[in-house]
Length: 475
Image (cartoon, rainbow, N blue to C red; front, side):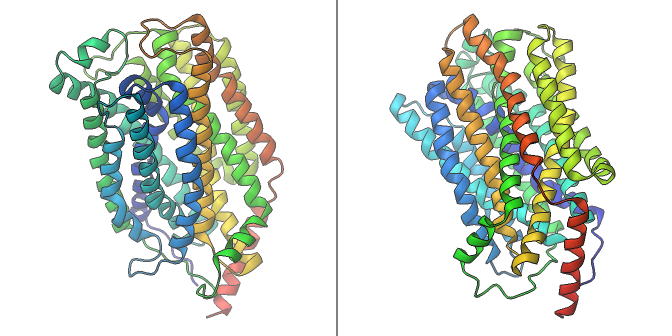
């Protein structure tokens, strides 16, 4: 099989898919805990447990999606059809998830469990095939690294768009449709409106953008890489057995889990940290962005710099070494974050620096999962792209599951009160360690795991060359 050069348009189209996924994922990671405690009105501990239960089983559902997408046959390919089929359900389910019905405490909790779980299922049905598409567009490790970088660049662009639009949209719809209600009652306390109508309309607006991006991703990409052998007689049991025997896969899943825990805990507490500890009421003229939104935007801009620099730096120093150094520096800076003064300029500088190094990590992580697809195929003759990439999605969801759950539980341990005009010193201390020291520990675990990762850049290139030779001789 002759390796085809991937066009700029296709790389951008592939990036659009993760821009859409990331727009919602950032809402889940950074806003959902606040939504459940201060808009829907359930306790932080209950929300944390709900995150864990819903995302834990859904993480393993990702593996099922990977298995069925590997076996999908259509005129559009194996993985692209899911972008077409689930784009609209993705947006609709998102709006339903962020609807706040006027039920009692039990009814609200049941509603949260059902809608959040269904949202995660729909997210899996579109995001797992999308991630697997990376391994089907090209067999060239260099092209895959480039595609992964485009993917992560557009993911951060999508996140940036969410942060620019969501809070102003929520506030706008709250002010427009809820005058005299939660908009006015909560503005003096919260940095973002707690009006239910504002939230459901704001998320629906983001969802409509996601639909367009998913459909462009479907239209602009092409599947090229095919199986060396027919997979029709390969059992699911055999696929799973071979995957569980793949040592590099286990190491990468564990390392990715630690890195994502770093992001999950740090991001989910930011709104509370700024409202309760920083207490800065500044809003940028002409935008209505508060300091929490500006903090998120600074982080996403820095993440994007890291993502764009990752391919060049990893080519020079290797993926493994770049990953380890970047996550280590992010951890050291996170420790420093705890000791810095309550000064918005210093806080934003540390956010910028931490986010640059965190930005190096994710494109390398996804690119290394593509390398594991080749490694697995060389060992077994079976290209289980969807299954392996679903495991990367699984580690992502497990990271956010445990991270979000930990955030809710820690807030509860430190006696967070949703309706309090001022949180206690104990609660604020808990928020401070959640945005600094706990993420630093996660960085340390990620470095430790990557020390044992065996697939060097040289080994990855050798695997690719051997597979190319096998494909050419099997024609």
